[in-house]
Image (cartoon, rainbow, N blue to C red; front, side):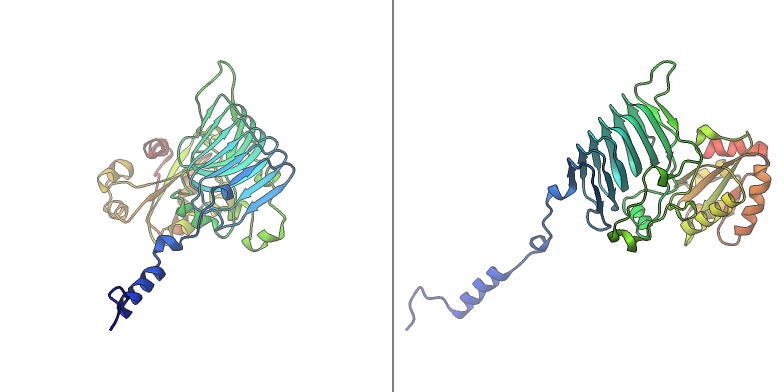
Length: 336
């Protein structure tokens, strides 16, 4: 005869099940915020390899004479009180905010870019929205140039299009009369001369490159450097492999000496298509498939030369191109 309070086999099994049961949130890797802080680095080089900080908030502060490479797509990042540093940041979904920094060189891709109380910062920038500087002086900007094998996927993971080139469209919150707080870097400036590639063994398998032809972001010269007055709009409508087609098209355009001013990726409703591209059912149907990538070229005989290049790609994607120099300026103004 068993004791009134003794456990049956069934009771014991239930207890064991309860003790051993694990939930998905128990299995998650614990995140230590300190892993995503770089503080008081002096005269050192640090590299965060792809996959080590993806989607995290990051802070860099109080660093001096150091090189910092973060090869991940990030959430947001703040950079405070850094001096004489070289910094690479992978695509950042939110904002990159520099405060109280001086004499730094950066390569940055982000959704939003802002500086406050900074001096002498050179940035090769890709930004989805208009960059903002505040109480900052001697700021210089160039177009983002970079490649490693994970970078294109990181752009998409951060929700950033490599074709939204706002890097030269700077807004100064605190302008000074008759002075310029910002300017563009020389057109022949190369990112490698400002932020050299790291030479540590750990990055060898990443296939790092600063060759313009490999860059995930096409090299543009910006709105302030337009050579001549003849403008031309090219618009490529979404299809499988569109990113690769656009980059191949732009590489051929660069080899041909065409001046790329800016690019933009945008979703356009079919009802808006006639106003932008004229009455053509082909464009309306193509606009339903996805985003449209617009490209502005500028220079002598641009429309004529670009139309010849577009003919080489007409069988691979639906492409609009300005009909004449007179139409070109209007097309560009409507699209951008």
